[in-house]
Length: 279
Image 1 (cartoon, rainbow, N blue to C red):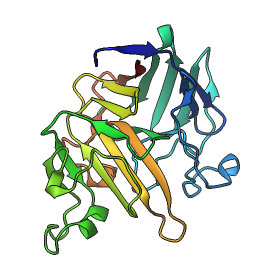
Image 2: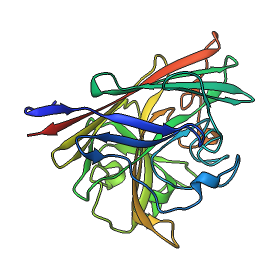
Image 3: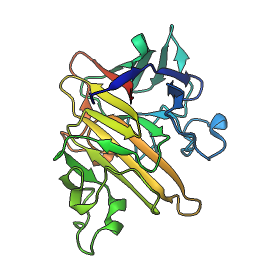
């Protein structure tokens, strides 16, 4: 922690009826979650096209691919106790419990499925950040750029047919990724491998996200849209997304790139989010 930084208590709110979506992450007079421009989120039905309403969407069993942003964001979740919600699908049952003990938000997840079931999960958190914000992660962390980054690289840099290009953080393939603005008309996605803890720095505020899970690949995904997407009506959105797995699309995930349910038929993980402010 930076010297002189003091904890800022956080509170989270969510909408169980609409995909368990986190609608607020607030503390110290600041709302961290961004709200999107796309209307119609309240009218979504299962298997509809994704609507970028902001907040934090639960993406499972994939982020990109089919269905886009996974199966659970478009379905109602069932309340199963204080802070606890459940969503059932044919191949898995996901339970989530959110608490905010001492101002630190903790989300505990448990997924029940057949042993060997493979999946990718991401807490698709879109954050409301200033153009001076940056993402702090360990220097040298191997980072996978995804294909939309190819247009920003010199011709011939991207390997033909490759699902990603890997390089060290904070500048894989020479693209500086840790700065989160100002808007420059670009949009790209990346996955920081074996990186379960990152910190977002925005002025005097710090937001720390940490993912705990035994014996599974833990990553942090970055969606840095600086007014480059969608092409017809671009806007700014910054996603910092703790992830189980190492690929956006489960279809691209190799043997070590997805989470796998162990023989006991259950897997548990924890997401911890805390905030600090420098005085």
